Length: 162
Image 1 (tube, one colour):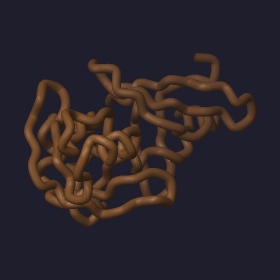
Image 2: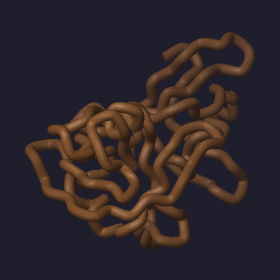
Image 3: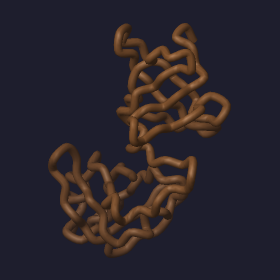
Image 4: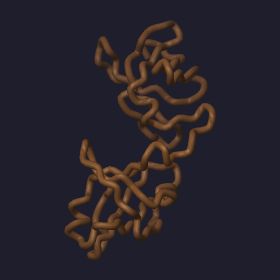
């Protein structure tokens, strides 16, 4: 849901880049999971404030600038059970990553590797199985026809040669 971008000042505050729709959405959660790879720990938010497109945050256990510098690059997450259920037709990005993408003609285009936010609409980065080619497919209603989470598949109006 975000990442620690930089230390801020000298008393252990960090500058956080949120990946949420609204800058302050992370502040709805008093406990964060902070880390990367298999190294995560729960941390409590002691104080926080919005600073433009970033958050300035004082986390429990980060007491000085040195500890804040050590946290740079770590990711911020919250437990799935703490998140609200998405509305119909809406998805969390992690629900889409790894899904197989199939054109309406039945051609398998590949799997969703990542999702890019462009401002106008999100793009699915789909890596082809056979050719290894990356396809950037807009995640918009005219192109994305159906998302089948249970079948781990996305149907799109997209050709192999696009």
